Structure formats: structure tokens, C-alpha cells
Image (cartoon, rainbow, N blue to C red):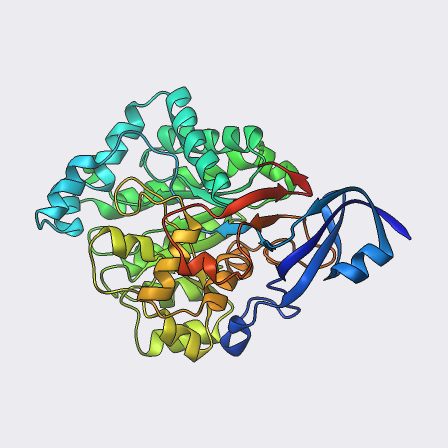
Length: 424
């Protein structure tokens, strides 16, 4: 009998989200791999075996056990798109939108990203760290065990580096795994109004190399976790040509790339991002036709962000159903940010996706775990409960995983385990 560090046993359902063939697509996305009366054997930071409680308890002896009777055990959530480091708030803009002013009109008038830019530039490092740390702690309580965090509210080299330093400090103090993303190309800052090409050149010629130098001395490089680069390809932000140039330059710096595309306007950014080998293309609210087919044929993951549409009071959501039926790999994320998605909850995002984007509960869970992990280039190590993978998992206070999407507004998470250790 093999001795392991921990056995979780007696679960009403162990939901594995297992996939031997990469990100889930098509019919596979509707299969979550349920083991009734299930158990998980964990040795150190890794999963050693998943199976029935009878089999696991027969074959393994544990130093510690956790009785999950009547509960669901599933992978920890992977939030593949967030902006949790920022200064200030946008409460006034929230009221403006209620009054009928559009997000794009607010942005064109100097609000939106530019408003948060001013607050972030002014905020001391310690304030940014404290406030982002509180957001991150809440996300972990809600079951997120891996989180991507972007810069992008500095829009000058010094503040972008300050944000990256905050992201590194968050990793040093949090048990969650953080994936850093450089987003200097989030918007054109006011001092470059009418000079977008000049700002694009600044991103390419100065910011990317500065971000790369920061990364090489960071805890992320030491742990082998890559730095990503992102661009917001949108009207009043970056054109398709500028997007392509920035992503190509980022790849030359050794960064993995992704892009915000088709949130409000279809500019061809999805095609440009795919040509640059993007890990993911995110938002996709107005993606249609040939670009859906192109996404489905690519290795990229399409990350949809329903909390944005909900927060903006929109009745139009990304056509995730069409993406799935075309064969695309689809993931979910919160997009937590102060303007368009002040939402820390992956369970709530899954509930939205089921109602407004017609995802089945199984599709939503796979999209929030395994496929989200592949959107970060980490699918071989996290996102499912399989032998050899990192032991990131949740115990949910329910006996059927579909309650995770059926119910909403609360927190169903009883225990959070990260790298085999109970952190909540």
C-alpha cells in the first residue's frame, strides 16, 4: 500500500474535467468526467490518483484524510483575464451608464481607461498592493486558484513597471499562482492624443524591452512561468496594423501573446492575433462568420467575458454557442476591472454564461478550468484532476456540480486546496 500525504474521499461527485488531448472542443466540452463516490490521492503538490473511494482507500494510505461526503470535488478555477491592479474606482461612470451614456462615449470623453490611468499613476505602490491583495484574497475565497493579472493602467513606462512590480509582490504573498501580462497597449494615453503611431512605437521600442528586463529578474522567470503581452484592438484604441506590430515585437522579446478583440467593433484583430500565434483571443462579442471558423481551426482559445456585458447592461453577448458548435476551444474569465467588470466571482460568471450564452453546466465548468488553463499555456499542469497534475482543487458545498451554475449570488466553496495544501 502506497503512502500519500492526503486523501480526499467520499465525495458525491469528483468532477475531473480530464482531457488527454488538450483543450476541450465540441462534444468533449460537455463531458466533465464525473466519478461518483469519488476520491483523490495527493502526494505533496501533485495528484497521484483519482478514482472511486473504495479503490483509492484500498490502494493508498494517507497521512491525512478529508471526508467530502455529500460534497463535490472539482478543479480550482482558472481566471484567464483580469485587471485587478488599479487605483481609484469608477463609481461615477457606473451612474452615467445607468443614465444612458455608453462605455465608448465615456472613453472618448476622457473617462474609462484614462480615468483609471490617472488614479493608478498617482497611487503609491503600497496602496496598489494592498487593494489588489484584498481583491485577490476574495477571488481565492470564491475558488480561483490560478489568476492572470495584466498591467495596462499606467500607459507610461514607469507606471507599467510599477504595476508589474505589484503583480510580483502579489505572487510573493499569495498561495494562488499568478500569470503576469504586460498590457501597455491598453489605450492611447491623453498625452499621445492624435499620435497613436508614436505611442505604438514607444510600446515597441521602450516598454516591451523594459517589461522583458523586469521579467528576467522576477520570481516568474525563476519559476518558469512566462510573461504574456496583450493589446486592446478596438476603435479609439489600437488598429489591426498596430496590434500586429506590437504582438510581433512581443514575440521577438520571447513573450507569449494574446489580444482583446471584437469587444465593440470587428476590426480584424482576431485574424491578426491568430497570425501572431496568440494563445488566446478575448471578448469576441461581435465576432462572426469567417473569423469564428478561423478561431475554430486555430490552436488559440476564445475567452468570453459575460460579466462585462452584464455590467454594461447589454443584451448582446459573445456567441459562445456558435464558437462551440464550430469546434473552437472556449474559456471563461471574470475580466475583473474597475470599469466594465467589477466581478471577482468565477461561479457567477459561469451562471451568466449558462443563461446568456447557452453554455451547458458541463461546458461552463470545463471553460472555467481546463480550457482557461490552456488559454494561459498551463493546461498540461493545471485545470483538471488527473494523475501527475498539480493538486489545485475545490470542495464545494453541494452534491451535484450543476448547482454551481443553477444557484448564484453566494459562495459554494467549502475548501480550497493549492498544490496539495488546504489554504481555505
